[in-house]
Image 1 (spheres, rainbow, N blue to C red):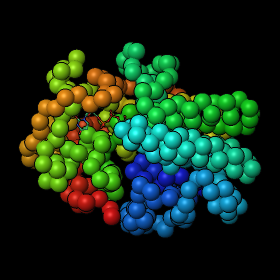
Image 2 (image 1 turned 90 degrees about the horizontal axis):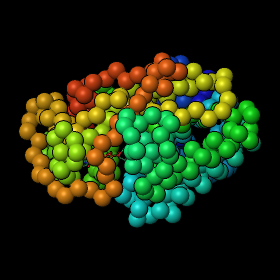
Image 3 (image 1 turned 45 degrees about the vertical axis):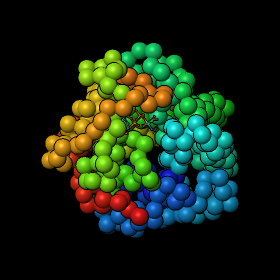
Length: 336
Ligand code: WQD
């Protein structure tokens, strides 16, 4: 069964390509290389032994999408292609709404023309805004605190309305908590452009000496050690959730949101300590003021995915930091 993976050379997309291939699917990759590199394709072949069909381009290119959908019997689309930096979204909101929302609408229109009715959407726990209770379940009110988060809220709303209007449509929204780690082969992982926004890649680059010191954004939160607590989930667990969700719902219709998290929160200093174990080195850090927009704690109630998809995270914190460190040491500068 052929599926299209948009953003298939990105961090989550590329790991999903491997998981789909291993599950017997034929992933076709579409990526505009705005935040990834063709070298990921080489790594995908190195890991799987398979040459993947790749199209360079944007999901907003109607002609290109039609070419792909005419050339391949696509059963479903795994949609990762989006801009994803919270800070950047506050500075360039129009670019985020254009890329993440209107381009998705264009893709949905072309999918409809080609009778492709199944979509797995890369959503985010950021759609819960400031948590009103914890752990976060799928019934928590939806809102956002930044344009990036609003683009995820809007696309989910669009998908719900689309499924209401089209009785054969299926849309699965997977709400990621904090994806970390790397493929166990050490041949694929996160390659952030420039200075990493996220904690784990910053810690990894500090451990290997690319960064001087980690800035810990605040140690005065109401948490066990004062630093921010998040639900870090190994990318391999995350992508397994995509395959399990598609397999479970492939004959269904309607809109189905799921949290993909571990249910376990770790603080910044917990992550620093765990990474120090993996890298067998001290991670230098300094306590700085809180980062605008951060919340104290955020972690998942993932029981719905367990109940309906029979999915749960299986990789522990040591696996997250071991796999991240292996990738960082193999490719200190990522895949240029
Ligand atoms: C984690 C913790 C920081 C960097 C973001 C997006 C979210 C999702 C995941 C896309 C916080 C602290 C961080 C640093 C630090 N992305 N920190 N020093 O903000 O929970 O979530 O990425 O869907 O939408 O919002 O992740 O890794 O940036 O921060 O102290 O250099 O680490 O304060 O407590 P976040 P993060």
